[in-house]
Length: 122
Image (cartoon, rainbow, N blue to C red; front, side):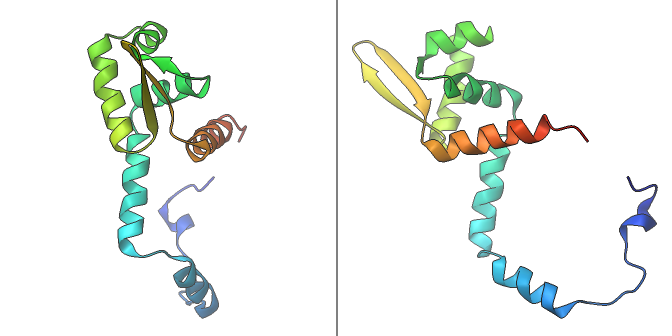
């Protein structure tokens, strides 16, 4: 682990043109980068992550999520609205109930991969 800031800076001060060209070829357009940053901002809130983790177990209604997380239904609904607007969850109505689930396997993979990563030993 670096001891100070100078451990993080090259001493050679030389640009490796092949590495720069490779990175530039890999870089998506700026608007895509901004969309990706917005996507990850949604994961920056512990409550939203807990909702996503609960939904990773399967479809749930607001009452179920509220009970699972020990939160009010209005607080859960507010977060679900944000998750739905970000296209991370989807909903369906059955009678008087609305059931939520993860939008698709991409969301599940991101969530489970991140969970696995943070659980790794250093």
